[in-house]
Image (cartoon, one colour):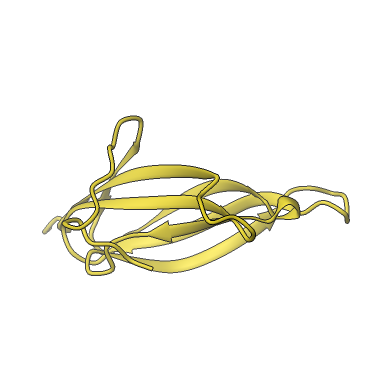
Length: 112
């Protein structure tokens, strides 16, 4: 699922700002409790950002519990300012349980 900067403009109050360089990867770490059915779902402008990997690092040591850290790796493919929105979804609900907003400011690579 992707959104463009023009058709969706949520309030960025309290958002996390990241300054990145085009073609260099950056990571977003979010806690997720899969035992409860939680899953973070990203939405972003695919013309400006690319998802490189999506990993889950299980933290709990109990076999009945599956919670841990979800690690998303992105890179900016062109310079600009982008919104990266994560919604914590539950399989049985139509609305998001939680929402995290990131403002990604992608600068062109420096020339040496």
